[in-house]
Amino acid sequence: MFGEIPIDLEKVGNGDKEREILRIGIIAELDAINLYEQLAAMTEKEEIKEVLLDIAKEEKVHMGEFQTLLLREDKEQVEGLENGKEEVEELIKK
Image: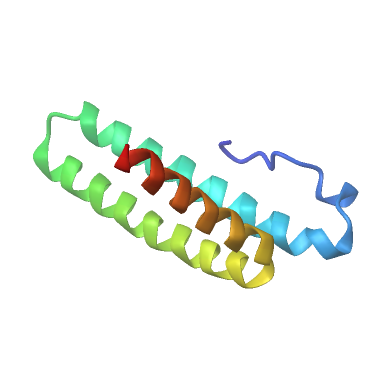
């Protein structure tokens, strides 16, 4: 993503705009987590690795904040997560 919003928010209806903003926040945090963890894996300096992994951990908290807000705004998303969890648990039992 790196600074670009993946959708045109002007084309999103008002009822969906807040949910899309929260999803964009989640995407940005996931991108940041991936970036910092990849950089940590590439560095040979332990103190740099430690700081990068700590920052990635903070981004996971931010992602959780966005997700919490999204789940308050989008009940269909809540159902989707619950259904997905159930499907995985069924598959793992097999």
